Length: 397
Image (cartoon, rainbow, N blue to C red; front, top):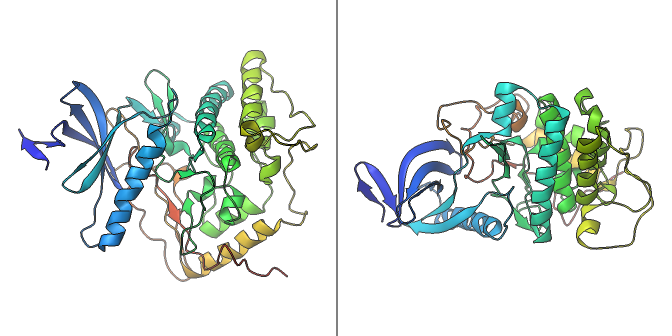
């Protein structure tokens, strides 16, 4: 049981919760003291809704433990460090390093977009983190500005692996829904066709656009509009992305098998930082991340972005049908994760527009946005309750 000491709660007989850094839909993040080692840490406390059935409550606890297991095995300077996982009064807690800084989303909101060199350096750091995760078979699945921390010293940290999955696991839940942030979700994940390392790289391409311009290229006023933009509309990277445009276009290739791989993207960004110019994507071997991790036969074609005039892939057409059904039936809520940051906390700040998606359905007004979540809490996700079965796709005329 947690104990009260001078109005401060101590959990597992070791971690004293001292101040709340922030609160979100999946829990609370506390600044805490490790009484055994005498250091400051961040403790993520999972919210437990007493009205939930026992099975669902247990599922929540398992999600937190899954996040901890996924991240604890990844040692990389650009991935959040998980120190410990404990349970207290049948409630799980995850103990992490405390990052003194802010999220990329908050930084863009307060200071404006990044310049090309700064975005390229951040891209290199995140590519390194993703390569480490993908090499261990772990997919992030919710890479977006709210889940990237920037410390006061400039360290870039990828966090909130709350919906991470081991490679090969299905994207869709049993009821046909998927989790993620639609503006940063790859088209193949939108359709439920597949998910893999390439899907995280699409998210990185969208994130770089947001970092450079302040807004995702797939931002729209409705969920249906976002889905259409992701799966079929012509992609218009912002003008600010021009210095690293070959990388952005390569990452935003809709065909995951032709998408720019992490190793090639990193080499191109490093070349830009060294010379001020980004080399074009070389023709020849395909550069998908699967080929970065496992050598396969090359495909001779440079990355491309299909125009709207070309016939959409079957998976994209499935996603459009899913989008129409979703718009007609129920919306999806997306909340932005806040961060472990000094002076952050539960101050009621609204997350930046790039990390939230309005939920609308015909004849109703948009619902109130959910409370922003915090770094260390489970990733903010949207749940699109499509009625399509991933095993039995709709028949396309």
